[in-house]
Image 1 (spheres, rainbow, N blue to C red):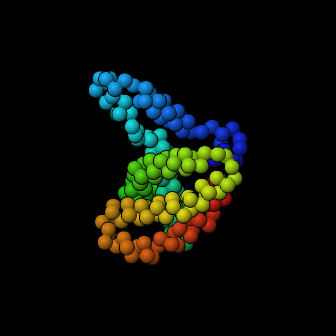
Image 2 (cartoon, one colour; image 1 turned 120 degrees about the horizontal axis):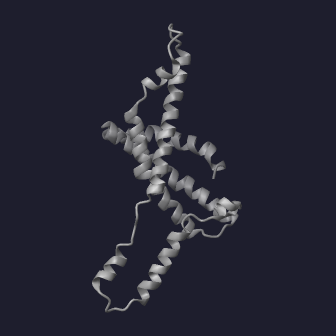
Image 3 (tube, rainbow, N blue to C red; image 1 turned 90 degrees about the vertical axis):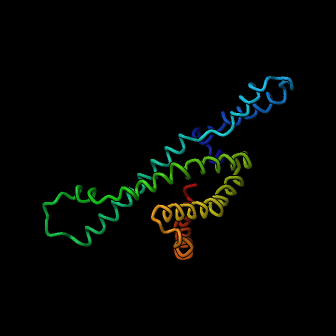
Length: 193
């Protein structure tokens, strides 16, 4: 990400984790073999920590995105089918039919899967492509499109079908919707990376 320059891009969000891992490896090599088991078990417990900040961010964004999508769909349907009651409050009408189960489904996907998964994914990309070159940037974009994009679509479809009790329909959903969804998502987002 440093290939784009700028102060925001140049601050690596995982430096503290990488530095801690380097210190831990050095300390592990330098520890005495006769150290107590409690100190060695304390070091081994320092492993993976759930990326709460990324999970909350992804969950919040998923909730916001789903809410916007639902409001847009209802607003479109209201404009196509105007009601006779012109005095009716449009905001109340838009919010009264909000599908909170769908919103919870998407929020939980963002919190449980996309936040932690993308954290690990981008940390891995930064580990294998650490230099801020155009070649590395383009490689990361390409890997996002051919690996992360299909994986995200597969997990979103599976998560939604699981919540809806339609797991048996998942193969048909993949056949019918996976490629169009992937092509739609790839049409505008490479510019964002």
